[in-house]
Length: 171
Image (cartoon, rainbow, N blue to C red; front, side, top):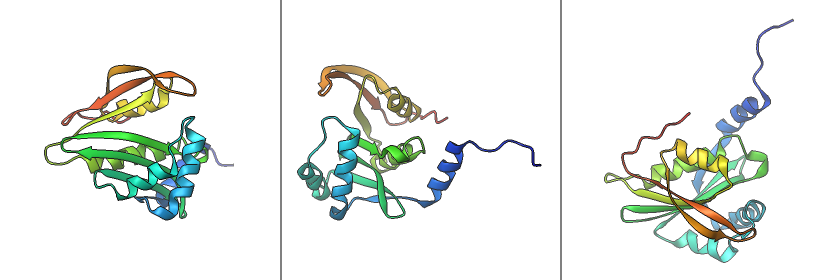
């Protein structure tokens, strides 16, 4: 019976997730779900008040990824003039490794791109190799280290930058 290769579970899950994944602006009714994701993903989470302030900020881009109307990830960037900062990307544990983080990153990069281009900065834990690999695949390069930047546990941050005109090397 039937030969041939079967797609891996991860590929089947990713295929199933992509068509139903919707990226859009965050709304106040989703703050509880966003904060829950924040608390699972980060040892020093942002407060509800911090997220609430982002909803009304003209320089902030606060996006969510939903599947079947459930928030499975979010991303935050600020854009002022020709510089942007990618402040946060988080994905629920169940939706990780399915391309959600990459889609959120691409979404924010599309928003921060404008005719002149924006230089985009971010900090990432030195131990977070998967995130650094994703950022490099989108044209980011390491430009420095912030010693002891993160708390709980204390860890250095790698500062990364994506300059206008830098071509990403997507795998």
